[in-house]
Length: 295
Image 1 (cartoon, helix red, strand yellow):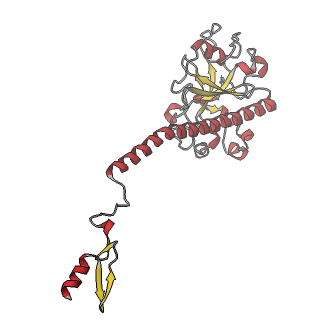
Image 2 (cartoon, one colour):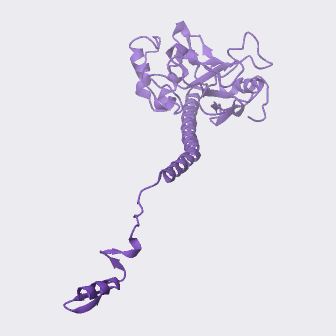
Image 3 (spheres, rainbow, N blue to C red):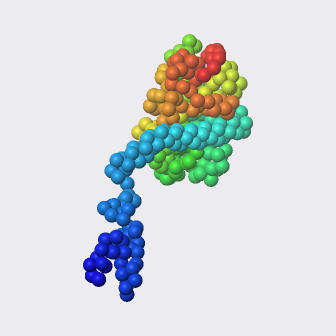
């Protein structure tokens, strides 16, 4: 009987209480025969797969990051344009109220009050304007506490340095880059000129014979510190254009390729750094007789 049972087991049979039973043909000791010697596949990444994924992610970042940066810069440039438009409206309202644009620097007795001080009431900052004593220099107390206040409308979002009282915009008093320039008028052939008389006066629209749309009033001049006449209350912040766009202390901004400028008619344009100096000079003068066709 024992021999028979062993023989039956080798043939896939087994006897229980004398009855032959057929062993499950697909099972051996509880393990399916097809899985004998089989190792389950891991659910994780292999090193090669991980490197491929990392490479793809790096490639996607390299493609999308410049686009994101360009989009952000476009937004900053639009904000800068809006700042200049607000300044243009304030300057036009000042001109409508007084008959002339404010002096770029009221330098009577070295007071050196800026054009920006005079347009504060037209920027809805009349209370700030009335805190400034025009009979004292802007940098003396109690004026300095007031003129040290940061103003968002005077800050370009692309600027790298923004501290209290600084401005990223400047007026132009004149330029030698015009055939009509002389030693006598090189600093006063622009619009926001220096006025040393006791009476606060400035250039009227009628004196801008080159045309309001052809004459620059204000431009970007970013990242100037107090030692660079970069405070909004400092009348010495106006400048004479000396021949190159993207020159620190003159036409200077952080936007790629050029700077934003405000024209006397209130329009804002982008001045490219490739423009010839004589074209920019023509745009800086109010009565040079030039006719720059386009910029």
